[in-house]
Amino acid sequence: MTNLEELRNKPLEELLSLAWKLRKSNFEDVLFVSAPSAKRYEIAGFKNSPRSFVNVSVTGSACALRCEHCGGKLLESMLSVESEEELVALGKRLVEMGAEGVLISGGATREGSVPLRGFEHAMAELRRMGLRVIVHSGLVNEEDARSLKRAGVEQVLLDIIGDEATIKEVYHLNKTPADYARALEHLKREGLSIAPHIVVGLHRGEIRGEYEALRMITQAKPEAIVVVVLSPLYGTRFEGVAPPPPEEVAKLVAVARILNPKVRLNLGCAKPAKDKAEIETLAIDAGINTVAYPSEEALKHAEERGLELRFSELCCTLV
Image 1: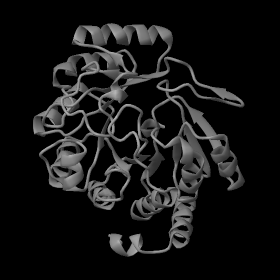
Image 2: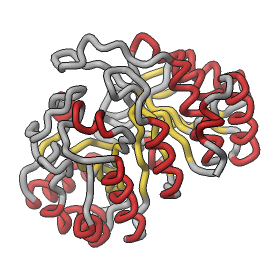
Image 3: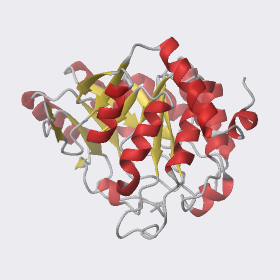
């Protein structure tokens, strides 16, 4: 593997140049635009629908961890189900509405996992209905991974954290980065497609464990890597935290592209509003394949760099 620390210490301009060359040599000249139903998105020539690809919580707004950056706020916008019967009934309604798929998630347990194990039969039924089913799992053990395999989920998303202090102070978990590496191993051993996420600036806006997370993810050989950026939410303990500079985000994206030249690299939903356009344009220069809900400026920049725009209402990991 290319030395990660050496790359991290290179100038941003040098990293962007190398990352762009690798993107050009390994992928078609297309920028995919992801706009699932979680947010309303409309620009000239495209508008998403309100039920194309929805987020579902199996715990309602309940979460045992109440992480510093979220505090359960992200659960409030999800559709809620409390049983397999409710999930199947929701699936039937979504199919009737023409939905393409669902992201199933929820609040975490004290061990950092989302309690999905009681929903495997319902998830399998949703697949039989023709819906695409992906899950945001949190930490998983061997049995969790086997359960997701039995459910036939198409993909597993999970945040990977590479700094022990961040895990304890932000996620309120008594875990270590090794626990996250093991979760990736369990999922890969079951043959599940994985799309690990890195939250840039998760430790109160600081860059702490992001590159260690990237190292673990690279070793796991994922199908896709998703980069999101700390976006301080009103009403959380991180409300007044300054997000990381766009240049730091771009550097991580570029290093991720260089270390994973043939892996799909996505800029996900979460981005601070004030730096959104700059983060997106720099990520395009760093070799990103897909951007969720991009700004008009980013789309214009992509076209100026010779990329064709293709729109989708699927979650970015499936585009």
